[in-house]
Image (tube, rainbow, N blue to C red; front, top):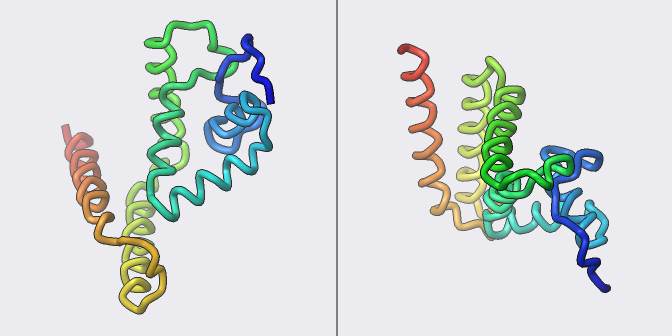
Length: 145
C-alpha cells in the first residue's frame, strides 16, 4: 500500500463518532474506521492506554478544515473543543456522572474480587480514582469563588 506524499493527517469532520480521530486515521492509512475504533477499544480494555492515546491524538491532530493552521493554534482550539465536548456530555449533571463513574468502578473491583475481569490489573486504577476525586474537589471549589 503506497502512501501518497501529499496526504495530510487530520481529524475527520465527516466520519466522526467523538472527535474524528479514528475517521482521520482511517482516511490517512486507507483503512476502515471501524477497525481503528475496535483496535482502540481493545487496547483500552487490555492495556488501558487507548483512552489516553485517543486524547493525545485529539489534542495534536488538527481538524480537516484546520490542516494548514499553526500547530499552537490547532492545539489551543483542540483543547477548547475537548472542554466544550466534555461540558456538553456532562452538562449540569456532573454529580450524576461522578456517581455513575464510581458505581461502575466499584462494580469492576467487585467483579474482579469474584474472578470476573481477571485479565485486568485493577491496582492500576487507584491513581485514576485519586485524580478523579481531586478534579471533582477542584471543580466544586472553583464554583464557590
